[in-house]
Image (cartoon, rainbow, N blue to C red; front, side):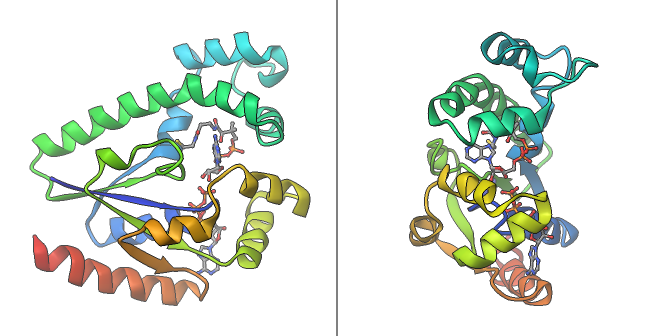
Length: 200
Ligand SMILES: CC(C)(COP(=O)(O)OP(=O)(O)OC[C@H]1O[C@@H](n2cnc3c(N)ncnc32)[C@H](O)[C@@H]1O)[C@@H](O)C(=O)NCCC(=O)NCCS
Ligand SMILES: Nc1ncnc2c1ncn2[C@@H]1O[C@H](COP(=O)(O)OP(=O)(O)OP(=O)(O)O)[C@@H](O)[C@H]1O
């Protein structure tokens, strides 16, 4: 099974691109989704987060208060590393399990969508890396609009990741998402045809 790592900066359009590939028939595993699964009530990682960060990162019903935790970790690199130390092993384990299931089902190509593919050193687990790219101002605008963040909060999230220009240099294929959704879709369709369908 060929595994394509799909990455890019925050709000670059990874999820949007992955949905389009999925509509065309691709198998997709999304690290952000796995990150949500591993902190569900009853999961070990949630208990560890509560121990490390205190009850202020929990909602009254015991679920994770993502906004409160986000405010802490995107302003403090040491806190972010603590959180990653808890969640990343659980995310990687779940990803391996899902990939194994796809392999057993005879899947030809699978996308592993992960914002921190480079930062977390997961590139060795995929066969090639594709990067969804966006210029900084468009990235700030889309991030503020999607998550209702101030410019300052958007900038601190962007600063917590490898700069997009660096990521762009490391991609075998770069999907340019500066344009419209239609332009994104056209690129995805072309890549599907030329890089996946014709090779399977
Ligand atoms: C801090 C948390 C609670 C904030 O939750 P929130 O719902 O606001 O954001 P969400 O999870 O949807 O992430 C949105 C985007 O933020 C960026 N991001 C998330 N975690 C990180 C991180 N540790 N470092 C840098 N960027 C990150 C990614 O681009 C991601 O796509 C959450 O992101 C989290 O648990 N992060 C740690 C797990 C992790 O590293 N996830 C990234 C995928 S491996
Ligand atoms: N070509 C486009 N034109 C306008 N808006 C877009 C385009 N592509 C994506 N968006 C919007 O930009 C925002 C970010 O896109 P998306 O959620 O796909 O990014 P992402 O890389 O998965 O982000 P994250 O790293 O935070 O998970 C979303 O609100 C999405 O609807």
